[in-house]
Image (cartoon, rainbow, N blue to C red; front, side):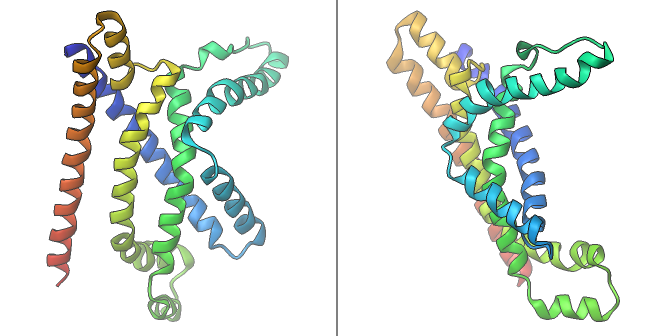
Length: 226
C-alpha cells in the first residue's frame, strides 16, 4: 500500500503547520480575552464562541469555497488600481485553504486551553512580580507563561492528536492526504477492505504513538517536579 503511505508526509505537514498557526492565534486570543479592554475581551469571546459552534467540515467547505473567493476579490480590489495584475481563486491552493480552515477551527479551542492555564497561575506570584517592578511583558514571560505551561501542555497534546484525526477531513477538498489517496486507490482497485484497514492502521499508529509519548512526557515531568 505504498500509494496510501505517500499521504503520511502530507498529513503530518498539514497537521504541524495548522497546529503551529492555531497555537499562535490561540495564545493571542487568550491574551485578548484576559485583557483590560472590553472591546478585545468581547471580540475574542465572540470569535471563540462562533468558531467552536461550527463543525470542522463545514468550516473547511466555507473557507475553501466562500472565504477564499471573498479574500481573492478583496486582494484584486487593491491590486487592480495599482496595475500589478490580478489574482484568481484557483491560485490559492486547496492545501492551504485546508490548513487555514484547520487553523481557524482549532485556534478557538486552543485559546480556551491557554486562557485556563494562565488563569490557573497563583495571583500571589503575579502580585509579587508587580511589587518587584516588572512590567506586563516581563511578568508574562518570566512568571505567568512558564507556570501556565505545566497546565497547558496535556490538553494541548490532546488537541494535537485530535487534529491529526481531523486532518483526514481535508480529503473532501481533494487534498492528497492518507484518506484521499486511500479513497482513490480503493475506487480504482475495488480493494476496499484492505485499503481502509491500512488507512485506519496508519492513523492508529500515529495517534497511539503520539499519545504514549505525551503520557511518558507527563510522567517524566511529574517526577522531575517532585
